[in-house]
Length: 183
Image (tube, rainbow, N blue to C red; front, top):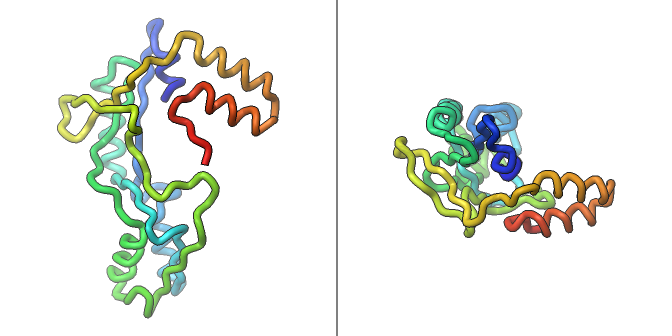
């Protein structure tokens, strides 16, 4: 998003969309759960209290089209996806939709969170607000500070200087990106 904002201008318009988890897309948890149910379980999730926002494929396409139609350049478009869904609830409902009973016919197993993974997904940070658009379910994220001139060039130069040193690169992200927090 920051790169798109920094590159916007000079006759080229860049904008971004923020997706939730797109149901039925490659990598979506629903086909994974369905396959695990088909095999007789268990259903695996990283943490029982994990919550995520979901959108359908048509909603994702609508967001892209609306952003392209309404965007002037530099914006970040966000779909109102309602409340986040607890992944365990999703797993239990999918088991029930298959005529089975969670915990009896199909076990649900927590495998543990991966490094950097969050329990709760944030669509907007504390530093952001939203502006409405002509579509009642689509908003534009509002940033307190614009991307500084030369941001990409400075970041690229600093990353090249850091080489493959992950600790230095993480420190660069923390220094240049206000919303970056190391987990």
